Structures are given as structure tokens and as C-alpha cells.
Length: 255
Image (cartoon, rainbow, N blue to C red; front, side, top):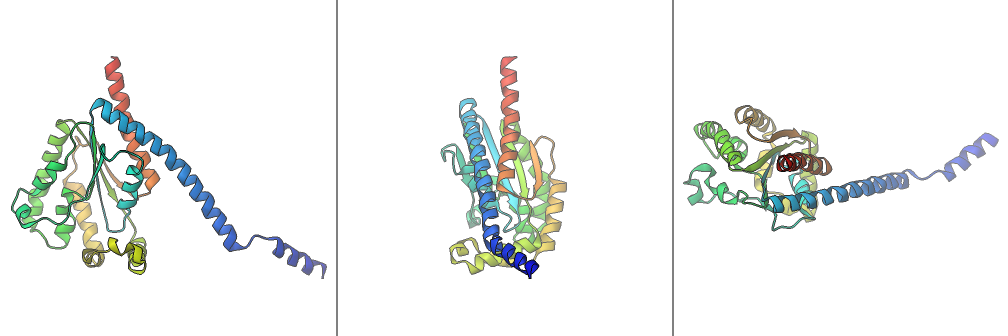
């Protein structure tokens, strides 16, 4: 009886699992927000460096649907000036744009002095969604593979700091996120007919991604990353990369 009573008392004193889980999530959220706030300070400092030194930074985000590009971009931009940090997310090309040189419609959006431009998808659409969904020919893809490194080299030669990132997500997590968009009326705007069509082409996208990495690799580009996205990790990565540029320019000025 005594043992039974002790177990009963212990159970009554214990924190319910639901409350314990909630407390853990709140602590994790608090730690996340504190670290993100620190990174936002560093991003503001980066912004001032870009303005002061008239730097040009171009950040390209590619990845599967549901990989978290929007969340990463929001974390990067929510505390900086839209006059310095500009997000470019182009719609499907018009008939006129389809008749142009492929990369032409992206060129007007490249950064000028004192600007950071973030591409939410980019010219790499040709090697990804356009190829997988049949919106271009294999000949057009091969032309893109042949030309992309040279175009990016010209960007870098003009003084642009070019950072390219592929954001990855597992097949299971992609399914969960797409179902969340379907079931949550607040997220329906994120769901497109193309998302649903692309969902069934997982392995086609994997093959396209791997060939894209292989054929567009170029040593002049500052950084090409294959990453599983987390907003903090991406903010930290971009700040770290640009801080090295910042330090190098300071050392050269002293010398």
C-alpha cells in the first residue's frame, strides 16, 4: 500500500507531458529568437558596410518546393532596409521575354553599388523546373550549362559578390509541408498548380539538381552550397561569408 501511495503521489506531483512539451518548445523558441536577434544586429552591420563601401551582393536561393526559401529570406530581411536588401521573385516569363536571350530578364535586377539582391529562384530555373516540367528543350538546357559559368564570371569580374545556395528538404518533410498548405487556409496562397505537378517528380528533380551542380560549377563564384535550410544557419552562413570579405577589404585598406 505504501509503495502504491508513493507512486500515486509521484504521479500527482509530475508535470503533465503536454505541459512539459509546451515548456520545452517555449524555451527553444526563446533561444531561437535571442540568437536571431543577435544575427539581425550583424545583418544591420553588414548593411552599413555594403552602403559605406558601395558593395554589390547577389544571393541566389534555389531548392525544392517547400524547402523553406521563404522563411530564410524573411529572417534575412525583416530587420534591414528594403532600400538596401531587395528580394526578386520573378513570375513566369511573358511571351516577349520568352523571345529574348534567356538570362536577359534577370539582368536588370542585379545589384548596383550599395545593394544586396536576393533571388527567390533565378536563372537556374532553366536547369530545374523548366527542364523537369518540359518548358524547354534539352538543347536549351545544354546551352544554359555552357553559358551560365561565363555569365556568372562576368558578374564577379564586375565586382558582384555572388553567393549561391540550394536548399534541400526530405521527401517526407516536403509531403508534410504541402499537406499543411492544403489544410491551412492561411497558407493556400503558397500553393500553386505547379507545386502539385512538381510533387510527383521527386527523382526527376534530384537528377536535374545533380547535373546542374556538376555542369555549372565555377571557381570564380564565392560560394555554392548544398544545404538543408534552417533560418539561423543560413543567416549565420551569409553573415560569416560577408564578414570575411569585410575583414579582407579592411586589411587591404590598412596596407
